Length: 112
Image 1 (cartoon, rainbow, N blue to C red):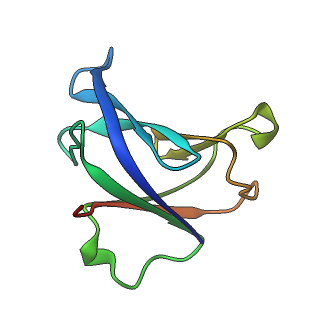
Image 2: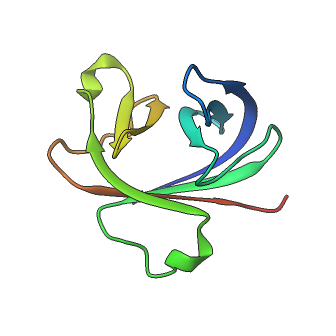
């Protein structure tokens, strides 16, 4: 399981209607991800937790967004790219995930 504590640094418009692109940073990682406004939203300054695991979390209701998907690019490129049915999450540096493995990615806001 991977668990990241991050702060959303900025949220920019995308070329797609109803979609924005967010950038969040943690201690040693940067995550860039699609924000589908009809599903979930984040704002600059939000503290978020992202959990990635091969198993669906038992506390599913505690998350604002959960989806499942697969690696969309080889991690040798210097990053991890997860596609959750077309919603993209790019992690740098790579997380060390396995190819051809279904992953659940869940996200929630955290206080402080």
